[in-house]
Structures are given as structure tokens and as C-alpha cells.
Amino acid sequence: MFAIILRAYSYLYHLLLCLFLLGLSIVAMTSSTVLKISMLPWTGSELISWLMWGSIFGLISIALAVTGVFRFLFPLWALVVLVLMVQGYLLKPYTFASRTDFVSTLWLIAGALVAFLASLTLFGFRRPRRA
Image (cartoon, rainbow, N blue to C red; front, top):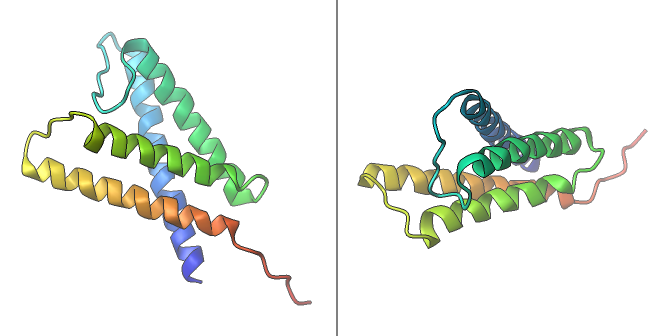
């Protein structure tokens, strides 16, 4: 039961993240302003492309995991998100505007860590159902 709750949290966390990033990339594509997210390794139109296709990949991995068609893709997605967050915010020279921003970012990374660990419950063995 606890694993199911963790898995639902993981799906919801990444669903919201993917929808946010997809919306951000669509707005950036349709506007004339240049999108800049300094914690990510891409810039300009390459950044918009990575955000759009990455979020679509994330949504597909969530859908495949929820339906049980190919559930092992979702933990890979969750790991990539966690690595990009840790690398972009903590390992690169990223500057935070205030202590509050830093603490909020740590909570975001902690949420991604819990979501990744929860996604690993997909590797659990399934018990045969009783008739």
C-alpha cells in the first residue's frame, strides 16, 4: 500500500513537471523572447527543443508506466530529471537570489529524489492474484 502511494506521488510530481515544461516551451516557441534557464546546459532554440521533446518523453514514460506497457522507462526519466537538477543547481556555479530561493530549490530537489526512489518501486515483483 505504501509503495502505491509513493508511486502515485512520483507520477504526479513528474506529470506536473512535464506539463509545466511543455507549457513553458510552447510559450517560448510562440513568443519572440529568448528563453534562458541557466541551470540547464542548453541555450536558445536548442533549450526550447530539449524542453519540448523532453517533456513529451516524460509524459510518454508516465503513460507507459501507469498502463504497465513499458514501466521501466519511467525510473530512467526520473533519474535524468534528478541528475539535471543536482548538476544544474548544486554542482554548477548557479547563483540564488536569496536564501529562500535556495531552500525552495532544495525542496524541489528533495521532491525529485523522493519521486525517483518511489519510481524504483516499479521494479518490485508482482504477486500472482488469487482467483
